Image (cartoon, rainbow, N blue to C red; front, side, top):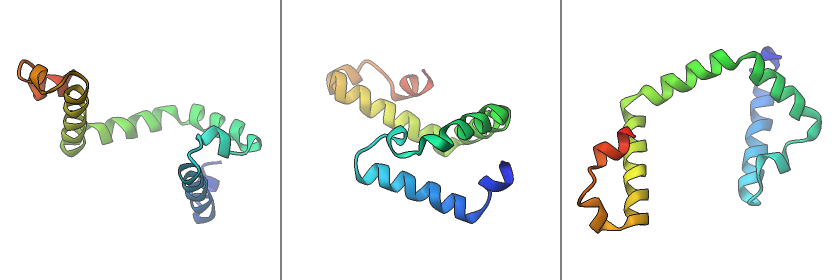
Length: 96
């Protein structure tokens, strides 16, 4: 299964599915054929450790941490307003 997912045709097909979903405002569940849904779940379960390690690596990068912190601060600012941000530091929000 892993070698199949590494092929360029499959990657192109996955990109087409994602593009189609975003263009039509659909969820991936609505776009992905049910015939491959089970295969995807099995692949994810079988490779959960590799996937988790990859996610941890990406989330550990300083640039990603900064983007998450900035987005969290903006979300709090938009929700609570700039007045509340005077009492909360963006670093604290980013760490939480």
